[in-house]
Length: 212
Image 1: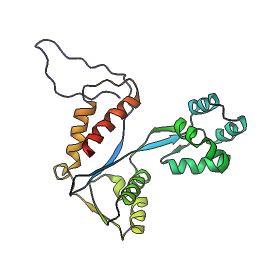
Image 2: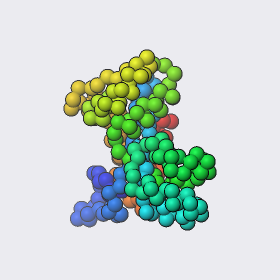
Image 3: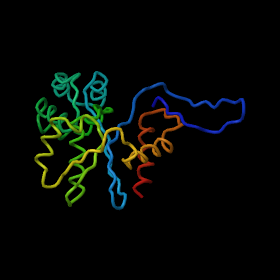
């Protein structure tokens, strides 16, 4: 949301200005392009944490006081996936309350996530669920691709998933780099977003055009 700048035209002597919120909150996306056909799969990386603001929001939505009291034990804890977050919530308030308030809990705790082994495995699972054929996935050199949790996960999927690494410092070999470049050009460059939801919607709109 800080605002990305790009080249543009302007009358001589009239400097273009782009409004910005000054907020450095960013949108993080995993993506993969099919070698044949160009199909595109993507997933937003999210994290989850019950902050004082989250608990205040849940209180305003009329969650019972005993449930809120149990949730306070998780305040400030950060979870890299929704599965880890919901597992912790289940231990704190029980499965019945979790099922009843699940959507409200997710909405109040959701935040921009990080690229790490846990979130990458979630994306790999998305690919495995989408495709029925064996997958050869060509990766760039991101450190989390070689993390221990990812390595262990790939071992359990060796019949369906093979990972191949690109040479270092070779973005020109990676076709998705052009998609990222075009997405920034069409979705974020020289644009003002008053809310994070507006930023996300702009990026998803461009992604859907890519898929179409």
